Image (cartoon, rainbow, N blue to C red; front, top):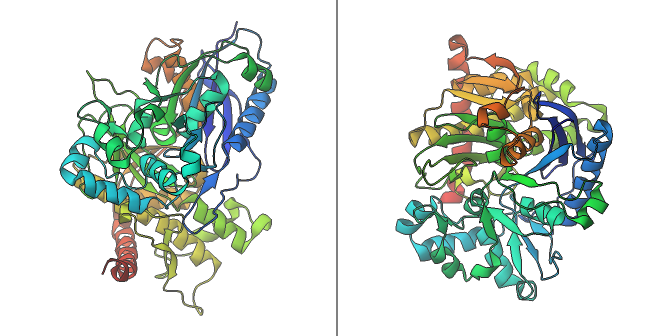
Length: 501
């Protein structure tokens, strides 16, 4: 009998399901739903919401598809892992019914409330205990609901992160994880538990917060009702959950201090692991509990996030070519422009406030446009260079924190499919880049194997993980990319000055 593992990766663009063969470590089937990007609703400027029931619909479609592709037999599925978009807020009542759309990661409405809590609690508490300002994270989003929608708040039984909601739909149980609580800024790193001062400052009832379970553990089993909706066998354990960035790092076997992972999907990230609770005094990059954290062997993840990454590229696709231009064609066009795009700079900050800019509402900007010189290829290249420059801005903050950033791992997906994007990332940051044949859904499946004790060790779980390519910086071109970054930085400072004065 085969030993199969199901991974679910709930993103803001799509939901991906994967079935992994535990013995070979190879994906047998994988599929993302819907075929086009999931909508993000923005009822007001700076807001971003999605319907959790829409996520559930696509989860069911993904599960059905991969099961049919693999022809799963009774008893073969041994565990289910869930990865999910971080920082979102889902509120449910006593009947487990969703009370309002989820306020997702790129929503900016709660910035002022997070800053108010930071002032109330004080820097001397927030930074050593929370490792972050409450900022625009889940706790602040919940405070917004309490203040602005009391009719919703009065009905709340539990609040959850997006992955907790999917686990609830599958098992009927409402739980969360320590890494999840840390990403919501509910976690006190010194006390290794919920932050009572944070809950008090934001007037959040403690009973609203679900019980936390380890990321790798049996966290419930498929219920009879979920079995009838999904075609899964009742009783299969849910044995792993993690936010998308800790999970992406895990999927690349980034588990030890000094190891780093990067992604470039809707948002762009660099995630580095350390064994000390490092923090940026300005909370421009953020520290969370990593998936393999224990009290005896601490493990933390420092996350740099740029909201406007793949979403900028997809916007350009719609504006410049729509269905008539593929991403591959866009990459080819962009490569025809010179390094630096003839001094055309793109600030990619058009998807909510950016943490690396201390939650400044910057917006996206195309700067230095010369109508006699610049054309499509310059705009496309400037966008890719601008995204990497924004990541480089955060990368250098991480270096200043004392992190050793020499080799970064990435899945061969999204913007890392672009040779130009890969080269710019390697050259601008002067790092080695390792590309692997994996994704978040495969990572969730491997995590499920550890949590269900299908694998005897973390090393065994990564049997079958394939290194596709290693790229190293070219010292002869370093100066040209550094000039590009410095020009981009000067344009950023030009735009920031009126906002910070």
